[in-house]
Structure formats: structure tokens, C-alpha cells
Amino acid sequence: MRDGLLFLHIVGVAGWLGGGVYAFYTYSALATMEPAAAGPALQRLKKIEDRFFGPASGLVLLSGIGLVLTSEAFGWSDAFVLIGLGAFLISAIIGATVGKRNSERLAEATSTGSDVGAALKSWRRGTVWDFVILAVVIWAMITKLGA
Image (cartoon, rainbow, N blue to C red; front, top):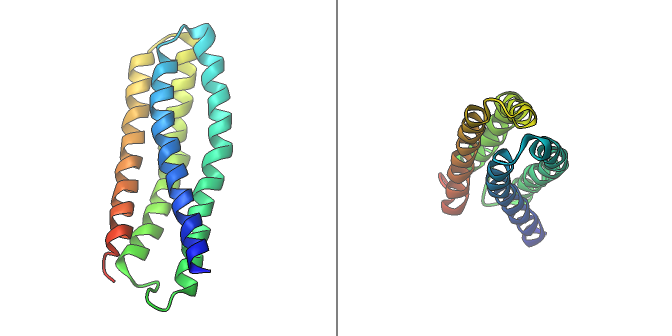
């Protein structure tokens, strides 16, 4: 059971991180296109992104909870588990607030062709912070920090 849960956990993390890297470069490329093409393309990608990141992050959370519940070696008080849960919460809050606002601003800018550079810069900054959070969590998980 542990190996299956660990496999699902790693697949979820790989999807979450890989999807974020893909979105980072794709959004940047789309933002430089003509507004008539960029706006609709970005809107379409955003819909796909919404359907992708929810299940990927949910898989990470649920498999991680399963790993803790079935583990005799690790528990809820281990630092790497607390870091993972905290980062999941922080990432979700950032995504639902700042990330959503930045994505909407970028979509509007690419649709109209106005202020695209500033909107893209804000979107990238938020995305990079999410990458930093995920990198800390991955490091904490690999090293089993506090276990």
C-alpha cells in the first residue's frame, strides 16, 4: 500500500511542478502574440489549467495523508509533513487570491494588447513564489526533515 501511495504522491507532485513550468513558458509565449490570438488562447489554456491543477494537487494531498495514516515511522508532528501541509495551504491561498488576480489581469491585458508587460511580470512573480514553495516542500520531503 505504501509504495502505491508513494507512487501517486510523486506522480501528483511531478504533474503539479511540471504543469507549472509548462504554464510559465506557455503563458509567456502567448503574452507576446497578437491580442486577437493571445486572448482566446490564454483563456482556453486557463480552463485546461483549472481542470489539471485541482486533481494534481488533490492527488498530492490525499496520497500524502494516506502515507502518514499508514506509516508507523512518520507522523503528523514530523517537520516535513507539517511543511507539506502548510505549503499546500499557502499555495492554495496564493493561487485563489494573488494567482487568480494575476491570471485575470494577464488574460485581460493579452486580449486588449495593453499593459501586457506589467501583467506578465506580475503573473511570473506569483508563479515563481509558488515554485519556491514547492521546491522547499520537495527538499523537505526528500530529506525527511525533522524525522
